[in-house]
Image 1 (cartoon, rainbow, N blue to C red):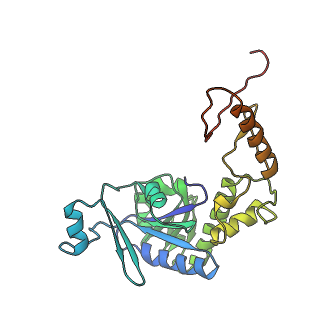
Image 2 (image 1 turned 90 degrees about the vertical axis):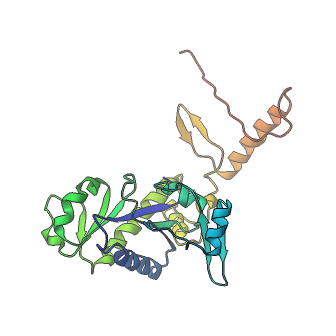
Image 3 (image 1 turned 60 degrees about the horizontal axis):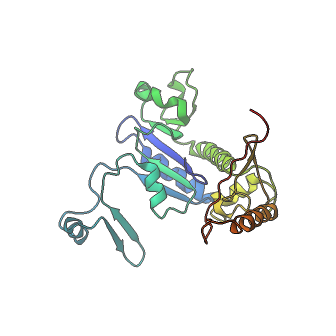
Length: 261
């Protein structure tokens, strides 16, 4: 899972079940609430058009082709992308921190919105229910009562978005230190997570979540900015006095075991 991003799948048992209809309603509602959203959609046909300039560059050997117009930018990366969803999100310029993914049904780890045209399609998707945030169906009352997922009709997308927002806040807050230090300018990590999801901040703006990791008895100790800089200064000053230490120190790893075994 990518720190600082909430990735949620929209899947169905078959085509034309209404995934895109539900997805577009979710996007509109999230935008209305002030959140920024990106969408990754799996398609079964090729994206570029055979014989067009982009296709000619691909045939000439280009690994990537970027198409630019006055109001749009398209990025074509040629290779076996298949189910490499995290690579896609990390490598493409997706700054939005709520990412809706339509399709990629074989990926099991992500939380899911399951869309079904008919309740009878339930059995085909039962194996995904354990990682399900919500089921959207024409007649949710006809779904089995033991279904653990919350069930909604196509007209209740607002309630689905409530669940998506709650999950996203919980996920992003979990990516943060969780000590409510206030150094970011927000009173709690949860408030900071809201700012991340609205695109006002990014997870890299967290002053505590740095490249310094201190553990005592295998327990992680969070350092505020000043103690962190003091520790870095002490260690660098000590190491620079030793022979054999590189002139430019980029990374320091120390393991100390005290006492007897």
